Length: 481
Image (cartoon, rainbow, N blue to C red; front, top):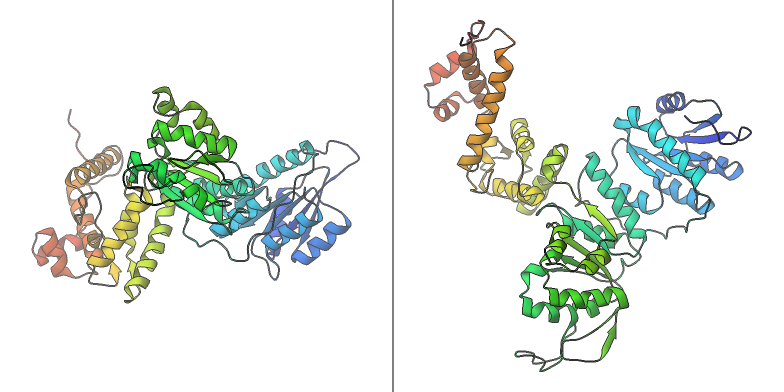
């Protein structure tokens, strides 16, 4: 911990948590010369102490007895708009992370990472306190209702996305949301709107690629009667419809150049003309845009206006693909399964452990959308309330075991890894060992039903029983040469 800038001024840190053991650990972890640490188990006591003697930093658990950490953050920011607050949580919901960042928290840290992150983040926050001497505007109150938990993720990359949503929702600047197809760009846009001061106004989403080029301008800006063939009446566009609200333009990279110039004018001047009209219409709309294209390259190729790119790319939120946050797969799969089961109004369904492991190992080229569709198909096809690996279709073919090419490649990779690991280490006969492990896996998937497992493996039940029971002889693998 860095020493105070001025020798006569001590750094004061308040720790707030209902767990006395955690308070003792954190106080010891942050102990340093020139640092005064006070601990509190109730938010009310911390607020009372802060009113008498403001701390440089408050570190609080989100879930407290009585007043929670979000309410504590609000009260501290009301007392001091510059209050530096870090929240911690063993299990922080999406809305907690977004709301905390929107209200001005410096960070939200999962408790599982505190051992190696706490000191670094605290020192960074204290440097920010020292550097920031100007008063920041206090954030407005969040609506009583919270966002539905449809953006899900406990991985570090998704926590950063939630924090960015919280930060940008306070402002009114355009936001560019990037990421692969199916990763949830519209959900992020809805969250930015939900937590913004525009939340009571309309949120309108437009997929640029879903509208023919010759109709897109009319869709966005409206038209006058008779302005083109088929224009039998006046029509307002989306910019008029969501005046005061938020317009989300998905797949912005495919917008025709002719429409791009008119969009640029709206962003610059806040005004436009309907198709077939010279009358200027004023509008106050926050534009959020999304793309899975590299817009920098589109600008270089002349397919996208450079001035519009810079107008839209004021703030960027990048959503990582699902394969880069595999720890979220299980959480998402359970969420989708519960939702599908509730719609089906049947018995509560669950995954076998092998099924979850299979989902976590898959690369999900279609990202979250592919995972949701896969769970939906599995629920529709399953005859049991337990989903086994054989019930879950993977790959674009929709077959039970995925596309043949992708699965051959995955099997080849797995076998190569196994051979590489075995050739220099344990004494083992590889083929008997693989046979036994495969038989055991299939038996587990069929809840030890020998007949069904043997049928899938293509062997007699007696041979299956023998292979599962028999331990392969340990023997040093012979290498060629």
